[in-house]
Length: 445
Ligand SMILES: [Cu+2]
Image (cartoon, rainbow, N blue to C red; front, side):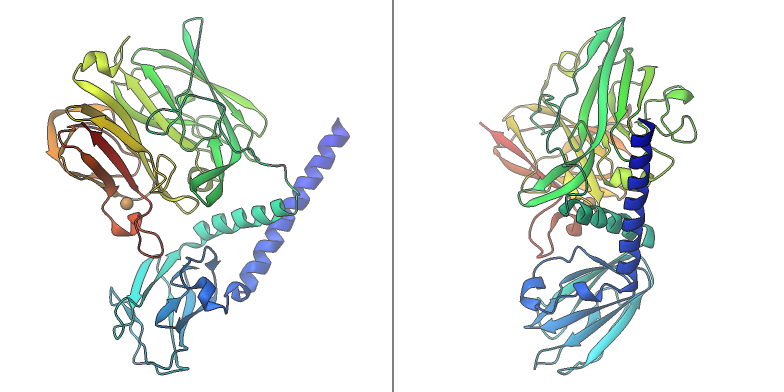
């Protein structure tokens, strides 16, 4: 047994050294090898590689190629004109501007500040591109992921699961976590593990997920419930779960290295508390001391809904016919998503004309997302689980990271009504076509 543990330990040390070496080689190479010379191939696809040091973008066939480039801070980008026609490179924000570049001429700019830089050739309409500058820490996360990918393709790591633990799927695409009553406690089980997750058809990415699903299954309780949540860690590193907004006792707060040690791989941890929070929308997510950024970006989060004492929303508000959770997220791993999917793979939320609809809206990402509803206004009725003194009517709500909202509206018009983030970058793919943070209310007669 000890010998086996030792072998495994040595094996995992060897594997992490290998990943580290691959990472260093990648950085040292300045990723020039991945800069494809076949522009017809890279023309329309966003490069997923994060470049460091330097990178070249071609101006060829009246287009920038690659059109979208990810770089770390301090990377020098060089544009080269490979067309007979002259081009230029002009930043939309004024950050940089080349003079006219005839065939064979180049222009360089070093990006020292994090951000999204859109630019264009002012001579040719529609000839534009984007440079996305990430900080080094974020790039490290992405590179470590792709190194793991390489190890996988050689069959060096265990095969991944693909699905869920069989929880019932709700109309909003989120699974509902079942519980058992034991000695007056509602007992829930969460299992953190690595899976493949399909963000949209053709885009399968590695995820770290609770019970195999992104977001994790929805936990639904009533105010006053006593709950036990048993968390099993099947990740390759320590983790915890934090109960966001629920004001639990300190020992149950789930902050790694602060209220508890990180739960080690293979171990379980039980959280026990009474739900005193007011009925409304909350969340849960991993909050380990080590690797917190990566764990949240990889999918370890979910909705936590508190219903009124001993009853459900529909009983307290007899007017509501539909109740949906809409969880918006941004991450380098999944892109811009609603309930773990990117449009058009996001859920279509059904309604009938005359229905009153309650939406639990959660921003679990790290950016502001102004969510806009087509065709109808809605009312914000509560925020962070607390009812507003008087509801506010609007058609766009600027959701902030880590903030939860309850909104409500009357489905008074037949139609397929979009509900989407209004930052254009968050709702288009690298070609500028609709994608990402968009969902639909399908209101029928
Ligand atoms: Cu957005």
